[in-house]
Each structure stands twice: as C-alpha cells, then as structure tokens.
Length: 504
Image (tube, rainbow, N blue to C red; front, side):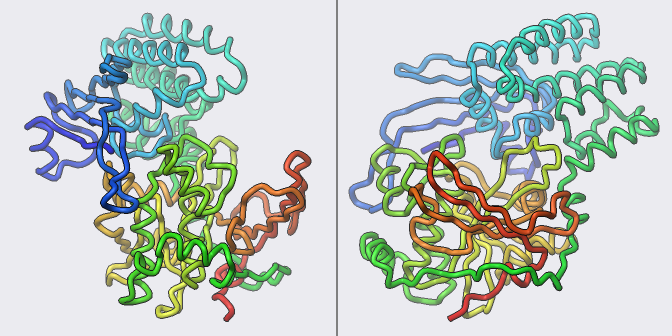
C-alpha cells in the first residue's frame, strides 16, 4: 500500500491542473509504502502493516530534480540520483509511466548488477552537469569512462544498460547543438538513435535541437526514429486488414461453467455475490474491480508455475505478492468463464521490427450478450473504454478509434495499484497505441490454459495487419523438449474471423 504526499507547492501545482512531470522548483513529492496485512473483516482487502520504504522527489526546477529513497528497518538512504530532462527518463527506462517515483523504483530494483547500476546513474548525473555547463571536454571524458566499463559487461547486461548510452549520447548531441556545432550534434544524435533512442515526440519538441530541424540529416534521423517510436503513426500504417482471408483456423471455444474446476472457483470465492445481479455489464465490471483490488500488479516477476485462478490467488495471498498483466487477465478470464460469460485473455503486441521492445500488455475481451459485442476489460488498470457517448468499446473499436483520432474515454476510476491514475493520454494514446499493433489469444479459453503439463498442446491465433513485416508461415508447430508442451500458432489477416462471436 502506498500514499503519495506533496508539499504546498506540489499540491498547488496538481490542483491547478498542471500537466506532466514539470513541477515548479521547490516542489517535493514523497511516496510512503507500507507492507500490507490481510483485513480479517473484509475478504480480499488489505490494511497497512509496517513501512517498507520512503521515496522522495525534490524539484530544483521544472526540468531538474533529485530522487532519494530510504529502505530497511530502521529506514536508511539507499539511492540518490540527480536528473535532468524529464521526458527522456520515461522513455529510456521504458517502464510504466505513472509517477517519477515508480520510474526510479523500477530503475533501482531491476538492474542485473547494482554496482554497475549505481555507477551508471552517477555517471549519467555527472554528464547532465556537463551538459548544463556546456562542457564537452568533461562530457567526453565521462562518456569514455562509462563506455570502457560498459564494454566489459556481458552481452545480456549490455543490452539491459544500452538505454544509458542512448540517453548520454542524446544529451551530448544537445550540448553540441546549444554550442552551435551542428556536425557534432548530428553525429551524436545518430549515435543515440543507433543505441536505441526512439522517442520521436520528444525529439521533435526538444528546444535544444531547434536549430537542427531544417537540416536534411536531422530530418533523415527523425524519420528513422518515427518508424520505431511514433506509435500512433505506426498504428495508422497498420490500419488495413484482409477481410477476405479465409485461411483455415481452429474455432474459438469457451469452457462451460459446469466444468468442475470452474464450479469450485465460483463457489470458493462466492463469485455470484461479488458479481451482483443487476445487469450483465454490471456483473462484468464488478468482477473486474474485484480482481483488480484483490491482486496487485507486479510486472517485475514471473507468475507462479501453476497458472489458474485458484492457485495464483492462493500463492499471492500466502506470499504477499502480485501478478503480471498476463496473470491478472488469466485470473479474471477464469472468473468470467465460471460465471458463464465468454471471455478471452488477449496479448496486445507491438510491431517491434528491430526486436528491441520486450513489452506487451495482456487484457481481457469479454462478450456482453446484451450489447452483442466484445468489450475491453483491463484488470491491471481496472479499466474499460468508452466512446464520446459513454458506450463501451471493444479492443477492435479502440484500435480503430486511435487510428482515426476519434474520441475515447477511460473510466475515471481507472488506476494502477491505487498509486496513480490511468489517463487516456498515456494509456491509450501512447502505451496501447504501441501495443495494439497485432493481437494474439488462445483458441480455447479454459481453466488452467497455460499451466505447464507434459504432453499438453496450446493453440494460439494471431491477428496481423497487412503492414506487418512477417506474414508467413500460416501455421507453426513447436514442441518444447524441456516442458513437453506443443505450441501451435495460426495466422490470419481477417478481424471478422478473430473476433467471431461465441457460438452457443
């Protein structure tokens, strides 16, 4: 459980409707996180136990801050980082953009080597100072030292820390641009992009680079970045499907609620009471809220080995842990099936033509018979999506509306772990615009669909736009020798086949 506090300056800025992370100088934000314990008076509820950490962000200006965190018992300072250029941070670390606090928490906790991580953060902080002082000699010396240690890392660790190089080269490019040295600025911008910088929107808005934008080399570099990092642009290019595609596909099936495991799930958690009895849509949303509140999202760890709702809920309760988006969608999917509501968990994938984006997002498509359509349900963010009339939208409709730049609304109580609000601008226009490029789901929606079991076969169907760079083969089959599971993948360009309504 976490609560975000702010001093008077920060609170005044937030109440004024200030946008983004550009808090005024003097603002201080503090995130206090408590260990949770079960609330014996409310099933599925938790209450605070003991403080686990305190994280603080103090803004010197709208673009410069210091992050500090305190952990342990008693609390002791663990990390202190000075940061420049806020838009870059959110892109380079490629983490869920909720608050600066969670950005830094992720950076600190998910690095292969804490020693190098601390060194990399310190060097980047010093390079920011060199940028501020426009001291290219100092910047080069620091960058050379970092590159020397970086080159000694394993290939896997180099891949992990590559974003630091991208960020450092970018800041060096900005330094030379501010000094009026266009050739050097373009040289290091090219190095930044080669090392994985692809924040096209920031590249085009950064005032440091304003004098480069008419240069043909800059335009070429920007165009290459757009093909990787302008997600709405990429999605618009992927608007076309082939509705005449009649390649053979297995039928989508939905396990009956009479299945013994689903009956046990329904009775064990009293799902009828949780779902309520007002309307079909109301039941669907009540189950969404319940799963979101029952299990926190944890994108930093794998899900338990046994991947069904009963087992994963028990493990999370016993170990005080959460599930990643796939685990949450699996739990919710089985709850819907147990209630006789057709549902799938759908993996939403990026184009990722360079194989550098390892992030995807898994949500649910739930069939509302009263609406005669699939609707978008996301347990990670407790989110559903509507058009300007307040009508619930499907994954297919949301994708099309993003492409056409038509109005979309996210429910106002959508949130991530009750720590930050899930906003339309980030969630749909950025994150899901990236991850709605192509879609994957199992052909059979059932209890225990992805638990490892020798001799098991799991079949997936992929919906690809015609723009996708890899259209063939139509079908692949692979048996993992270690697990004994056979994976079969089918491909289609036909959304009507992929989104077929459940057959009664």
